[in-house]
Length: 260
Length: 177
Figure (cartoon, each protein chain N blue to C red):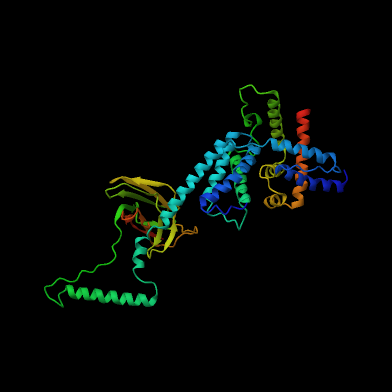
């Protein structure tokens, strides 16, 4: 076979294969050699040899995948609408701009001073002071408690953190489990987020569930965190309109030091 | 692949992509493992992985076809790595168990011919096998294959022609000889 013919063969061959795959009947160029024709004929054998999925498999897998996708989206939707953690909630009480912060702090100090003075009977001896009200924290329906064996750890030492989730309400709740768990430094700056799963847990009234994680003292970028005090954070997980939240009500301060 | 305008929700988009690419991924895997049940399991794994990472997939970075076939290739690699071998499973284990019901002579012969061809395909160098799988199962054009395998487009055409010729000659020798 001459080289020019070889090149022409290969170009025509690709086009013919694509025609066959697209189930189009192309005309075979009579000037092309036997190798080309034999390859084209053989292509049909290769295609005949392909495995085909059964309709039952095709439909069954599709149903299963779409149902998983719907479930995943429902959980993500719930997460998006979840209220911020207690600390975020507290932080949001104070407006963010410096001018507003100054004003808010001044007003708060003045109100506190007024209340103290009122309560001490400075303005009206014998009378009760005014009742100060504000936004109420959400009702805790599922209490989460975190605990550790120690409170002080050496740098690099693995820290096992045990959690107990207890339904303290009168009705059954289902919530994402485990919920998002974070480790923050003492100013609640998050240093590490633990992967969340997409499963859920149902707790009947009074029922509890344990869970454990091990923190290797690394931050989200895989670096050792500096010595200092750290705390466990679980953002509140809403359980539905007016049904309260899953909230972390007790957790230890974890001290990481060079000389524990 | 252009997702139709009607597909608006994530489920609809995923369903359309699934309908188009699942049969191709299935055929791609079947060329390699030659066993219906195993092909179903591995195809399921591919689409489960795709589902988990679907949020991270960006059509700006790669076509869905390229993305799903890279998952399929890695799934096959993982499967054979786990099995501690990259070789095709022995043919007598791999091919489906023939039906116990009596078959017409032509059908029996066709099955035997296909088994022979799969055996020859498994004997080709892995690069040639991959080229044939991407062309005949994935139905990619040469430009797409070139991009996936890091080859030039003309090189894909040349190598495909040679791979089919090699396969044909080996088959003719095994089947007729």
